[in-house]
Amino acid sequence: MAFSTSFAPIDPAQLATGFTSSFKSLAPRLAIQGALAPFARAAPDLYANAVTTVYKQRANALKNTYRRQARAAGLGERFGNTMRVEYPRGPDPSLDFTAVVRSVALLREDAGGRRRWTRLESAAEVDLWTVFDQGTVIRADSEHWLAIPLTFARSASDRRLTPQDFPAGHFIVVQPPNEQNPLLIEESTGVAFFVLVRDVVLRKRLNLGPPAARAQAGLADSIVKGIETALVKFLRAQKVAA
Image (cartoon, rainbow, N blue to C red; front, side):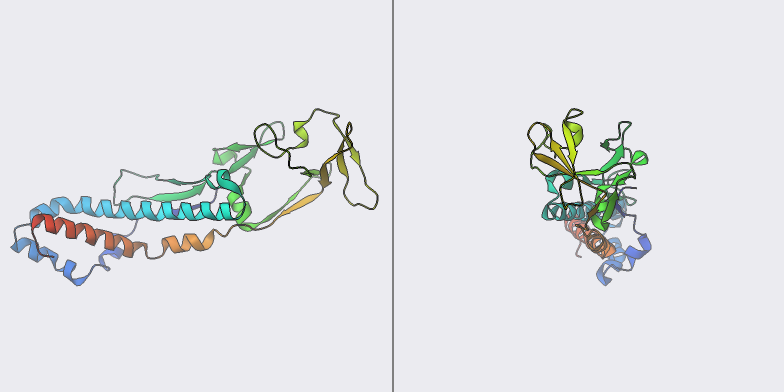
Protein backbone atom coordinates (compact mmCIF):
# COMPACT_ATOMS: atom_id res chain seq x y z
CA MET A 1 0.00 0.00 0.00
CA ALA A 2 1.18 3.51 -0.77
CA PHE A 3 1.85 5.95 2.05
CA SER A 4 -0.97 8.51 2.35
CA THR A 5 -2.45 11.11 4.71
CA SER A 6 -6.13 12.02 4.30
CA PHE A 7 -7.99 15.20 5.23
CA ALA A 8 -11.54 13.96 5.79
CA PRO A 9 -14.67 16.17 5.93
CA ILE A 10 -15.20 18.04 9.20
CA ASP A 11 -18.44 17.57 11.17
CA PRO A 12 -20.42 20.85 10.89
CA ALA A 13 -21.29 20.58 14.58
CA GLN A 14 -17.59 20.67 15.38
CA LEU A 15 -17.25 23.87 13.39
CA ALA A 16 -20.23 25.52 15.06
CA THR A 17 -18.61 25.33 18.50
CA GLY A 18 -15.68 27.41 17.29
CA PHE A 19 -17.49 30.54 16.15
CA THR A 20 -17.08 33.71 18.19
CA SER A 21 -20.02 35.20 20.07
CA SER A 22 -20.38 38.04 17.54
CA PHE A 23 -21.00 35.54 14.74
CA LYS A 24 -23.38 33.46 16.82
CA SER A 25 -25.61 36.55 17.15
CA LEU A 26 -25.30 37.38 13.45
CA ALA A 27 -28.77 36.26 12.24
CA PRO A 28 -30.84 38.75 14.31
CA ARG A 29 -28.66 41.66 13.15
CA LEU A 30 -28.95 40.55 9.53
CA ALA A 31 -32.72 40.36 9.87
CA ILE A 32 -32.92 43.85 11.37
CA GLN A 33 -30.81 45.31 8.56
CA GLY A 34 -32.64 43.43 5.78
CA ALA A 35 -29.65 41.28 4.76
CA LEU A 36 -30.81 37.89 6.02
CA ALA A 37 -32.08 36.64 2.65
CA PRO A 38 -28.86 37.53 0.74
CA PHE A 39 -26.84 35.93 3.52
CA ALA A 40 -28.91 32.75 3.39
CA ARG A 41 -28.25 32.49 -0.35
CA ALA A 42 -24.53 33.20 -0.02
CA ALA A 43 -23.75 31.20 3.14
CA PRO A 44 -23.39 27.71 1.56
CA ASP A 45 -20.85 29.00 -0.96
CA LEU A 46 -18.97 30.94 1.73
CA TYR A 47 -18.71 27.86 3.91
CA ALA A 48 -17.75 25.59 1.01
CA ASN A 49 -15.04 27.97 -0.20
CA ALA A 50 -13.57 28.26 3.29
CA VAL A 51 -13.45 24.49 3.79
CA THR A 52 -11.97 23.86 0.37
CA THR A 53 -9.34 26.60 0.70
CA VAL A 54 -8.11 25.36 4.08
CA TYR A 55 -7.91 21.74 2.92
CA LYS A 56 -5.94 22.69 -0.17
CA GLN A 57 -3.56 24.88 1.84
CA ARG A 58 -2.93 22.19 4.47
CA ALA A 59 -2.50 19.39 1.92
CA ASN A 60 -0.09 21.34 -0.28
CA ALA A 61 1.92 22.51 2.73
CA LEU A 62 2.26 18.89 3.90
CA LYS A 63 3.30 17.75 0.42
CA ASN A 64 5.97 20.46 0.29
CA THR A 65 7.22 19.50 3.76
CA TYR A 66 7.67 15.90 2.64
CA ARG A 67 9.45 16.98 -0.54
CA ARG A 68 11.87 19.11 1.48
CA GLN A 69 12.53 16.11 3.75
CA ALA A 70 13.36 13.97 0.74
CA ARG A 71 15.80 16.52 -0.67
CA ALA A 72 17.45 17.02 2.73
CA ALA A 73 17.84 13.24 3.07
CA GLY A 74 19.69 13.11 -0.25
CA LEU A 75 16.91 11.26 -2.05
CA GLY A 76 16.74 13.85 -4.80
CA GLU A 77 14.24 16.12 -6.52
CA ARG A 78 12.78 13.38 -8.69
CA PHE A 79 11.97 11.17 -5.73
CA GLY A 80 10.53 14.10 -3.77
CA ASN A 81 8.16 14.88 -6.62
CA THR A 82 6.55 11.45 -6.21
CA MET A 83 4.66 12.82 -3.19
CA ARG A 84 1.44 14.26 -4.62
CA VAL A 85 -1.86 15.86 -3.57
CA GLU A 86 -5.13 14.41 -4.82
CA TYR A 87 -8.71 15.62 -4.39
CA PRO A 88 -10.77 12.45 -4.68
CA ARG A 89 -14.32 13.50 -3.87
CA GLY A 90 -17.13 15.68 -5.18
CA PRO A 91 -17.35 19.19 -6.56
CA ASP A 92 -14.84 21.92 -5.90
CA PRO A 93 -15.57 23.85 -3.71
CA SER A 94 -17.65 21.73 -1.34
CA LEU A 95 -18.42 21.25 2.34
CA ASP A 96 -17.55 17.58 1.78
CA PHE A 97 -14.22 18.41 0.17
CA THR A 98 -11.40 15.96 0.90
CA ALA A 99 -7.69 15.95 0.15
CA VAL A 100 -5.13 13.15 0.18
CA VAL A 101 -1.36 13.52 0.27
CA ARG A 102 0.03 10.27 -1.12
CA SER A 103 3.08 8.61 -2.55
CA VAL A 104 3.23 7.47 -6.17
CA ALA A 105 6.73 5.99 -5.68
CA LEU A 106 5.46 2.45 -6.19
CA LEU A 107 7.62 -0.34 -7.52
CA ARG A 108 6.58 -3.66 -8.99
CA GLU A 109 8.59 -6.53 -10.40
CA ASP A 110 8.10 -7.28 -14.09
CA ALA A 111 8.30 -10.65 -15.82
CA GLY A 112 12.04 -10.20 -16.32
CA GLY A 113 12.69 -9.67 -12.63
CA ARG A 114 13.35 -5.94 -12.93
CA ARG A 115 11.60 -3.50 -10.65
CA ARG A 116 9.69 -0.80 -12.51
CA TRP A 117 7.75 2.31 -11.52
CA THR A 118 3.99 1.79 -11.52
CA ARG A 119 0.91 3.91 -10.84
CA LEU A 120 -1.22 0.83 -10.16
CA GLU A 121 -1.34 0.44 -6.40
CA SER A 122 -2.83 -3.06 -6.64
CA ALA A 123 0.30 -4.19 -8.49
CA ALA A 124 2.74 -2.46 -6.16
CA GLU A 125 5.38 -4.53 -4.51
CA VAL A 126 6.75 -1.75 -2.33
CA ASP A 127 6.22 1.95 -1.61
CA LEU A 128 9.56 3.74 -1.33
CA TRP A 129 8.31 6.51 0.96
CA THR A 130 7.25 3.89 3.49
CA VAL A 131 10.61 2.14 3.09
CA PHE A 132 12.58 5.30 3.88
CA ASP A 133 10.18 6.27 6.67
CA GLN A 134 10.56 2.95 8.47
CA GLY A 135 13.86 1.52 7.25
CA THR A 136 14.14 -2.05 6.05
CA VAL A 137 16.47 -4.89 5.18
CA ILE A 138 16.61 -6.13 1.58
CA ARG A 139 17.68 -9.77 1.37
CA ALA A 140 18.61 -11.83 -1.65
CA ASP A 141 17.13 -15.31 -1.99
CA SER A 142 19.33 -18.31 -1.34
CA GLU A 143 20.42 -18.65 -4.99
CA HIS A 144 21.30 -15.01 -5.70
CA TRP A 145 23.33 -12.04 -4.51
CA LEU A 146 22.67 -8.31 -4.40
CA ALA A 147 25.11 -6.33 -6.56
CA ILE A 148 26.16 -3.00 -5.02
CA PRO A 149 27.86 -0.57 -7.44
CA LEU A 150 31.44 0.44 -6.70
CA THR A 151 31.52 3.06 -9.43
CA PHE A 152 29.81 6.41 -9.90
CA ALA A 153 29.22 5.70 -13.56
CA ARG A 154 25.65 6.27 -14.72
CA SER A 155 23.49 4.61 -17.34
CA ALA A 156 22.15 6.42 -20.39
CA SER A 157 18.94 7.15 -18.42
CA ASP A 158 21.03 8.71 -15.59
CA ARG A 159 20.58 5.97 -13.02
CA ARG A 160 23.21 3.89 -11.27
CA LEU A 161 24.45 0.90 -13.20
CA THR A 162 23.35 -2.69 -12.55
CA PRO A 163 24.86 -5.91 -13.92
CA GLN A 164 21.91 -6.08 -16.33
CA ASP A 165 23.28 -3.02 -18.13
CA PHE A 166 26.12 -5.17 -19.46
CA PRO A 167 26.14 -8.15 -21.86
CA ALA A 168 26.27 -11.68 -20.49
CA GLY A 169 29.79 -12.82 -19.72
CA HIS A 170 31.08 -9.26 -19.26
CA PHE A 171 32.09 -9.89 -15.63
CA ILE A 172 33.85 -12.62 -13.70
CA VAL A 173 33.27 -13.33 -10.01
CA VAL A 174 36.40 -12.97 -7.91
CA GLN A 175 36.74 -13.79 -4.22
CA PRO A 176 39.45 -11.46 -2.84
CA PRO A 177 41.77 -12.87 -0.16
CA ASN A 178 40.56 -12.23 3.38
CA GLU A 179 37.37 -10.64 2.08
CA GLN A 180 33.89 -11.86 2.99
CA ASN A 181 32.11 -10.65 -0.14
CA PRO A 182 33.00 -11.54 -3.75
CA LEU A 183 33.40 -8.91 -6.47
CA LEU A 184 32.17 -8.62 -10.02
CA ILE A 185 35.28 -7.79 -12.07
CA GLU A 186 35.22 -6.54 -15.64
CA GLU A 187 37.15 -9.30 -17.38
CA SER A 188 38.77 -7.07 -20.01
CA THR A 189 40.12 -4.44 -17.59
CA GLY A 190 40.25 -6.13 -14.19
CA VAL A 191 38.21 -3.25 -12.70
CA ALA A 192 35.77 -4.11 -9.92
CA PHE A 193 32.29 -2.74 -10.70
CA PHE A 194 30.13 -4.41 -8.03
CA VAL A 195 30.45 -6.05 -4.63
CA LEU A 196 28.09 -8.98 -4.00
CA VAL A 197 26.23 -9.08 -0.68
CA ARG A 198 23.46 -11.18 0.82
CA ASP A 199 21.54 -8.27 2.34
CA VAL A 200 21.46 -4.48 2.49
CA VAL A 201 20.17 -2.35 5.35
CA LEU A 202 18.25 0.74 4.25
CA ARG A 203 18.25 3.04 7.25
CA LYS A 204 15.35 5.28 8.18
CA ARG A 205 15.87 8.59 6.36
CA LEU A 206 12.44 10.23 6.58
CA ASN A 207 10.06 11.09 9.41
CA LEU A 208 6.58 11.33 7.92
CA GLY A 209 4.37 10.97 11.01
CA PRO A 210 4.93 14.29 12.89
CA PRO A 211 4.29 16.58 9.87
CA ALA A 212 1.04 14.71 9.16
CA ALA A 213 -0.09 15.15 12.77
CA ARG A 214 0.72 18.88 12.68
CA ALA A 215 -1.19 19.28 9.41
CA GLN A 216 -4.28 17.69 10.96
CA ALA A 217 -4.05 19.65 14.23
CA GLY A 218 -6.36 22.64 14.51
CA LEU A 219 -8.02 21.94 11.17
CA ALA A 220 -11.51 22.86 12.41
CA ASP A 221 -10.21 26.11 13.94
CA SER A 222 -8.58 27.10 10.64
CA ILE A 223 -11.81 26.43 8.77
CA VAL A 224 -13.79 28.53 11.26
CA LYS A 225 -11.33 31.41 10.81
CA GLY A 226 -11.68 31.08 7.05
CA ILE A 227 -15.47 31.17 7.30
CA GLU A 228 -15.41 34.19 9.58
CA THR A 229 -13.07 36.03 7.24
CA ALA A 230 -15.38 35.30 4.31
CA LEU A 231 -18.38 36.45 6.32
CA VAL A 232 -16.70 39.74 7.20
CA LYS A 233 -16.15 40.41 3.49
CA PHE A 234 -19.80 39.53 2.79
CA LEU A 235 -21.06 41.81 5.54
CA ARG A 236 -18.96 44.71 4.28
CA ALA A 237 -20.37 44.22 0.81
CA GLN A 238 -23.89 44.25 2.27
CA LYS A 239 -23.03 47.25 4.50
CA VAL A 240 -23.87 45.28 7.63
CA ALA A 241 -21.88 45.95 10.78
CA ALA A 242 -20.06 42.84 11.96
